[in-house]
Image (cartoon, rainbow, N blue to C red; front, side, top):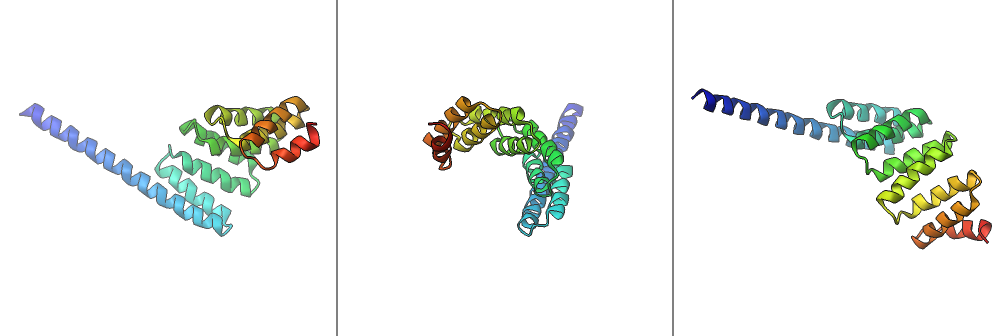
Length: 173
């Protein structure tokens, strides 16, 4: 009898925890939606507040960190945005958009080698990502690696990036 009641209590507690977690996730998603509405209105500070509330409710929510990073980027808080993209990637190591935006931040912060690492990671995840090839080529070019840049722009062009052909014609002939 005692074992049977203990099992029921443990089962009930487990169900309550799961329900609580799913409710927190649902509430967090609502804050994300609210933040997205504020982004459209260019209320970036308000959006950051909403995304932060989502993170409080569901700390492993990669999309909340990514979205908050985007709002911080719009406010030119590049270091803050970079930290949020780091967290988004920590919780979702295949988050291509977070790598891409973090790479763009690193370019703004003059960390071209770090940007190249992020674009390279995107290419590892999605070997046909034309924008990653193009932007990695731009970073390589800025570092003086014209050969590497031209190879990346060629891949970008073959995968549909329309700007790549201009760069190839201008710098790779």
